[in-house]
Length: 210
Image (tube, rainbow, N blue to C red; front, side):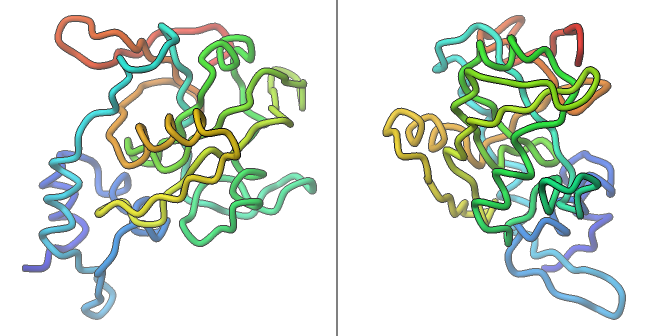
């Protein structure tokens, strides 16, 4: 059975624009077209619907920053080619696209020790090596020593690539990649607690600079 993107979004309880980010990022296998419509196999939607929540309680830090991204597009700055996420990007381009120029509390990002990258609420990449940061523009920070601990190219199975040289970084990437991690913020960076509160695995926390 094939669904339109609108039907798939309805099954997942999200906006169609949210679901289309996953389509455009190239992380959903088996898509086809009927005229101008993208058709999605029902098992793909079911796999996304049933995906486990990120096990944040297994992480050491009590609070974690989360970078919420859009589908990759050409970057406005000259020091990187892309901004955002796409499955087809090589690891070097992906790292450059994700490691900075956000409005954030840089110290809080560093304190978390790991930065999950989410696209439409799913963890598609993980950064580590966040101990050092620099201002890239007023109110914005970059993490020049960040490491791409891992990323995925298929969200449904999922197919993950653990790329960090450090075993602990690879382990945390393997723990988070492909899981669901919802967060809310007015900017790209959100902050979530890693300890369950009121039955929820994570809750958004307001933060200066977010």
